[in-house]
Length: 206
Image (cartoon, rainbow, N blue to C red; front, side, top):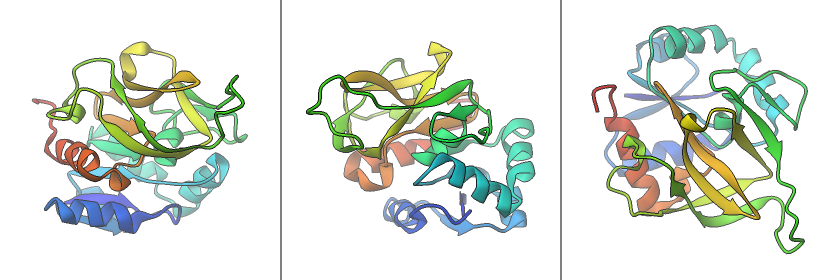
């Protein structure tokens, strides 16, 4: 069972519905016992960075999540704001992030005025290395994005996909058991289904 962390930020129902569609058992939960027992986790989120970190702190779940992710090495997938919260900091706010990935979150500043912010709609991702999350997907799959800020990893080895939007930004990362995607797999039809299946099937032996 995949625990979708409920800290009152984001559209969690669509993630659960996508897992249901592909036959993967999941639950939206803020219950500590459920999260402590789950074999893998999803950290969703939409909205502003500081509000997301405040909501996580208010939930009281951060110590449990850090134990599960950093000590027990449980696989976790951050989606959109959930990915950004895994970084150290964001230009969008003053609160520190979780710091699970050596990265910062920066605002789009496109030189081309025709490129609107937020970056919204379908765009391709370009895998930068072989990765279990992208297994059996097309060479450059398309996913749905809605965001004004994006993650910038300090270590290129953490980057597993980039996306062009005026600049080339880091749209997915992976280190050990921690995964993050800036796009919304739950809104990305067959490509999102494939990616979520891969996450559900992944193990360190893969």
